Amino acid sequence: MIDSTANSRFSDKQLIIIYTIISLLSLLAVWELAARFTSASMFLPPASQVLAAFCKSFVEPIGKRTMLAHIGVSLYRVAVAFFFATIAGIALGVGMGYSRLLEAVLKPIFEFIRPIPPLAWIPLSILWFGLGDTGKFFIIFLGCFCFITVNTYDGAKNVDPELIGAARMLGANERQVFFEIVLPSSVPYIFAGLQIAVTAGWSAVVGAEMIQSNEGVGWMIVRGMNTGNTVQIMVGIVAIGIVGFILANLTSALERRLCVWNEQKGM
Amino acid sequence: MKGFFEKYKYKLISACSFLFVLLVWQMVTDVFHLVSPVMLPSPAKILGTLWYKLTGGTVPDGSTLLENIWSSLKIALGGYGVGVLIGVPLGVGMAWSRKFELFAKPLFDIIRPVPALAWIPLMILWLGIGYASKVGIIFFAAFISATVNSYTGIRRTSQVHLWVGRTFGATNRQLLFKVAIPTALPMIFTGLRLALGSAWVALVAAEMLAATSGLGYMIQMARMLGRPDVIIVGMLTIGFVGLLLNTVLEKLQKKYVRRGKHHD
Image (cartoon, rainbow over all chains, first blue to last red; front, side):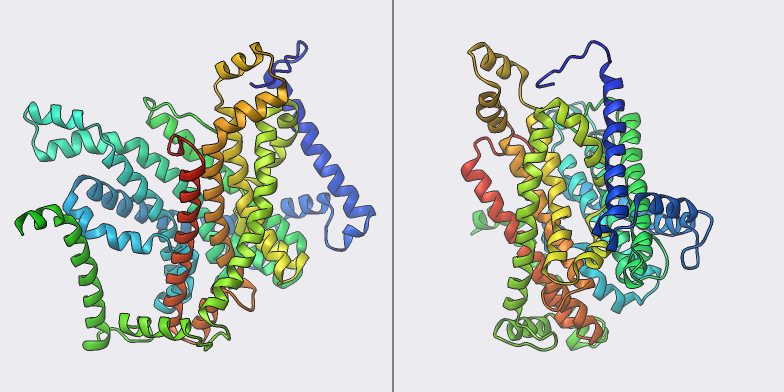
């Protein structure tokens, strides 16, 4: 956009594809050569080895499970927690945004809890829920819940007052104002919150599994650390990155589908 | 008197609600013993522990609260500094130069979806459990928000402003430093704030996994030794320091960046 190197031979799209291939190939080449021929080989396994191990992990189990099963376990944890966080977050956010009384009662408690990072709850959650899945659900729930609540709350607060006024003037009751105006106009905000929450949830599950688990992608990389297996860590990071990428894009695609009227700008 | 109540009605309700929660908490723990103190200590106990840790108590993790805060802050700010120093120029560069973007953006895009926490094992294996590995982890946490926001900020420069600049004979360098960067500054600042937030969170996780001091280490030790009061003091401190860092940056933003609330 800013300095346009207009190229007559290639279209913009082709140019992006060509450069992407060049840059990724050169990364892999530098990595491979450094790992094979310099002293970096001490700690850096060659790219080809990581790639081979990544492919193999889908058929050969790491620990008790294969790669897909580890990803499945982690995704299941996120899904359960995310489900409850969505319900609780939207209810609390809309409630606080719509009713000043509810806001006055609940906001100080919410604001007190909000700055504490979800991972800092891990020690307490282990004391409360033990080492099982419940504690992990709790951590991931906290990771998602705050973002959904804050965004929904912003949405419900930013409803155009003229719309509410017009509806009231035309004889809408409290209930109708809430369901026909406040809730629908918060939807774009809610979606923005859900999108951040999915990413935060994925990061929280990795953290929770790293600190206390015996399966899942977070466990995989910590196990790699404890056994000094760099290849396994890198395979895990690749898997975590790919799933994180898919989750982030899935929610933004869903948002574009469901909130067509709301044109979003930005990266 | 009535006017006073009307004016502060909601503030009063907030205060009452908060006190009510504390009161119920105190009741179920210390007064009626409905919840075991091993699961949830009373607010009074937590306050006592907070006072003890603040005034030089070193049990159970070997440092006072202030020492732990300092140790965590030192690492967080170190990694944050490196992340910002690399992230902001990278974002600006990618947004300004098409060639650089074509080459660097694919590389950035493959790092971006990996949560900072996932780098912890690699960093620890490569750099040990000392200062360097934690700075490395926090670097990843800070660098991504710093880059993304700088990039978006520069990208939002109005094309018309650039044309005007060019018409009046501004060089490419002048356009960057006099037009694009000032436009992007509020957005860059927001990025700096987000980056500090993620840096602080990543630090706690890193300290819980491998450290010998710091707030994350403190709560992890307290769990092993069954001291929930120390865990909660640690959690509150982590939250409070995080909030404080954010507030400081927000104040700086308001003071030095005009139209600071324009983008958010």
